[in-house]
Each structure stands twice: as C-alpha cells, then as structure tokens.
Figure 1 (spheres, rainbow, N blue to C red):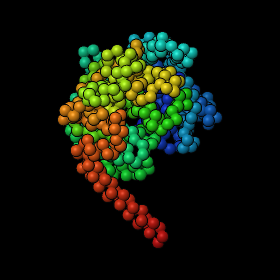
Figure 2: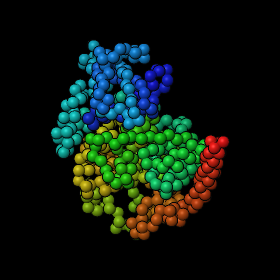
Figure 3: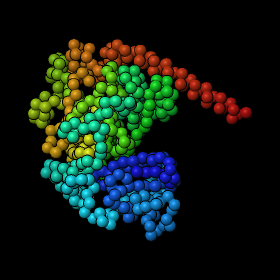
Figure 4: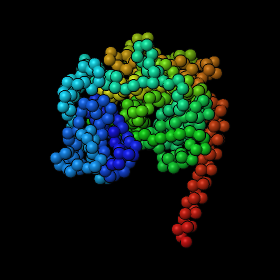
Length: 458
C-alpha cells in the first residue's frame, strides 16, 4: 500500500503482488515522499529489509538513512519519487519476522516460502501445460483465504451483497465515436439501474475533451466515476495495434486495476445500451466462478455459417461447451484474486501470443481457452437475456434483452452508428440527451475560458 508521508491521511493506492515475477505497481499522484507499507496478513509475518531503485541509484534501509518520525516499524519504508515518470525498477526485499520462520502467508497454504523457485520454474518450463498447471495451482494455494467475502454459499463461494448500494461498472473507449457511445452507455445504465452507479474508466486512451467534460456530465446525470490506469509491464509481450492493446486491458489486469476493497465489478462495452437493472446482475450468485459471461446466441439461423466457434479449432476445443462473448461480464474480484486468475490469464497470454495467429479476438479468446484447460479459470454462463446483439440473436428474443450490444455484423458490415439508430429505438433520444448536456458543458467551458482571457488582458 502507498500512503502520504503523514499517516493520518488516507491511502493513495493499494495492490497485490503478481506471482508473475513478483511484479507490482502503485500510483503516486505527484513527486515527493511517500510511505510504502506491507498490510494485511503479510504484516504479521514479513518485514521490509531493503528497498532499492536502480533508476534513482539510492537505497532506503535502516542502515542508510536516519529514522523518520512516520516510520514507526519495519512494515513501512520511505520512498522518494523525484519526477512525474515515477520511481521505476524498484526492488523490494522482505524477510520473516523472528518466530515466524515457519508461518504461512495464508492458512493451509502449501506453497514454498521461497518465491524465486516459482519464477524459475515458470520461466524455464512455461511452454508446457504441466508447468502451467503446477505453477498456477501453487499460486492459488498461496493466496487462498487471503480475501474475505460479504457472504458465502455452502461450498464457500462468494456471493455479492444483496443490499449493494452502488453498482460498479468498468468500461474502456478510444476515439470520439466510442466516447459518444460510452456517454450513452453510462446514461442508459444510470437510468435503468435501481441504485447509484459508479463507472471505472480506463484513462489511458480517453481524449482530453472527454476527461475535461466528464465531471459536469456525471453531475448532470447523477452517477459517479473514477479513472483507472496501468502501465504495461515490460516483461509481458506487448501488442502493437491500439485495438488489441485495449482488448488486452479488458482482461489481463483485472486483479490489479481496482482498489482491494472493491468486491465486484461489471464490464460493459462502451457501445452497449443497458435496459435491465444492473443491480440484479451485480448481486447474482455465480457460485465459485471468478467471472460470468453470456454465451453467444444461436438463434439467428441465417448467420450459421459465420459461427466460427462451431468450426475448426473452437469446435474441437469447446467439446460442446458454449463460446462466451466478452461484451459484458461480471467479475467477482475477491474470488478472482483468491484463485490467482490474473496470473493464470497472463501466463496463458504470454504462451499463446508467441504465435501471431493466435488470440485473434484477444479479450474473448483468452477466457474461453482457459474455460477449457485443466487448471484454468472456469466461466459461469449468464442467462442469454443479459446480452443481445442482432448479428447472432433472433428478433423474437430482443424483447427480453437486458442489454443490447452493437456486435459487428459479418454479413452486412453495417457501420455501428447506423446500426445503433436502426436497432435500438431509444438510442436517438439517449444520444440527443447526452449531446444536449455536452453542448451546455462545452458552452460553459468556452465562456469561462473567454472570461479568463479577458480578465488576464485587463
């Protein structure tokens, strides 16, 4: 956890350490002095021995610096951030506290105390399924029982709070068209949901205009928002196309994007219109699964030849199981972190992305692959009505749709803006309302800027 130098102030950010090479990121809003802390059960077992930054070429430990008033124990360490680029290449070393030499990080965990053995095993044998299963099963045992749930079913699986007073929604967008879609999605979700909605938006690719106008747009339509971002790790194979990078952010970093006290989040594509109450989805019992997706529709007969999941590799891999669409899904973040699902996804991504022809639909193919593999991440299948799109679903099933997605139509290739106005009756009124709000906001901002310029001239 990262906190201001004054311990009386609230935390700035927290995260979990990935089993992938022991990697972590924390967000410091500004340069300055910060306190890096071990929290949770780890605080009872470990102490910070050494913090080194190759970029800063400075070491912080008890021998190299005088104790400071806010550094009251060995679980916190002073960290200096010198620039807006942050403090990179941090090497954090910990040791066990006296008397805790045999204590386990979590109860009944069977993982070795030396985490380096996992890294070496993963790097040397990551190309084999045996290694993948072995590494990830040990990782899961190491984090089991670390996270608490609001309620449990008989098998110990997480269930969302039935009286959740806020529904949390995650989304991504890039480009002015998709930002327009995003505003409409947020507007429709807020109108259709019985409790307040808070949106978590990936900041990396949003335009300056969107960010500048969002505070007033959110206030006008009664929803909350917060930005999330994550720098792509250098050790993880990078994508070069913006669309594929955005797809990757939808799935690869779910365990580290959000605060640790956020229990659940629903991903909703920016080009969807929400008709149902998202509170029903947010509080749904999905058993022991880490996430829940909607299967692709089979009801529109004229596109049968385009159903790729019924042909070739997918027909063999699925073995009768459904292929799930990634336009909307519920993530139980507690369960997701408990079973090290993020590490599983990243290891599998690293293995499969070595082949440039693999993972053509990255954000969709990856979870569907791991739904089949031993030691993977099982998917809970949502009822079909939670996602309807004209490309694959029959017209008759549209009346029950709780969300409508603008899937690409493989037959007509119709532009999304055109299909939105044709398929979704309420889309024009939602768009008009959003555009009207934006017009007032932009006019107010322009007026304010003009007045400031005139004031400066005086």
